[in-house]
Image (cartoon, rainbow over all chains, first blue to last red; front, side, top):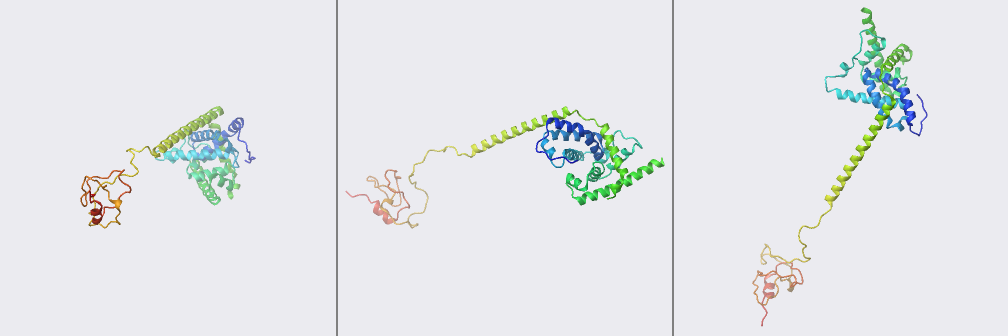
Length: 173
Length: 148
């Protein structure tokens, strides 16, 4: 999303409009990245709370949605690191409480994404869902363009294998 | 890259994200703004408290570094010499003698023997501070009681 770089910070009304317009979309994006809807809600809300006190930064070149998305992702990573010490590891926790058996395909996709490493999951989501280019993904994640391409290639291949396996399992039942 | 020709994957991603958006429970914007204001006030209070603690510590450190008044009594500029342990004058070559070097003043009533001083000189009796115990010749010459 291209925006003019403004020198003035967002007003209260502009921030509220931005929140109403984008909170659902950003929560959906983080849900796909994280594989956990509750987690996505928490980190997106927390990111908006932080954004309130940093309204000036929302007018930088990367755009306010990218800022919220990045902050939300970092909050999620911090939470994972805290939980790593307990038996509540990422793979076990990634199972959603309301997951059904052979559910809709998008649920299958989210399940398949959970099996990927975190950076691969984030990279493929930014590319396929947020429509970011390799350069834009590199700018948002801090990775090099070559690393982004590597993550995209490996992530796409892994998803293809897992989705194919899921289809075969569903067909055999 | 080949993913640009893979619309089905993109469609899956969008469907998943739409599902998350629909199911998500988001707070009203007023609550988000209020939480942001509370966080800002907490940060300000913490910053003020930290600045106060730093200021107090700095003042305490500065006060401890400032030297206080002297504990003991003020000493005179010229302190009387005190006979202390040291080699005997015969064993130690001293500087060229001076008449005023002898610490013991010419006391008309007292006999000053060689190498000994019965009374340390007072400040008023002295004109120059002593530098070293006088030699034997000097002592005998300067400590001889006046005649008559």
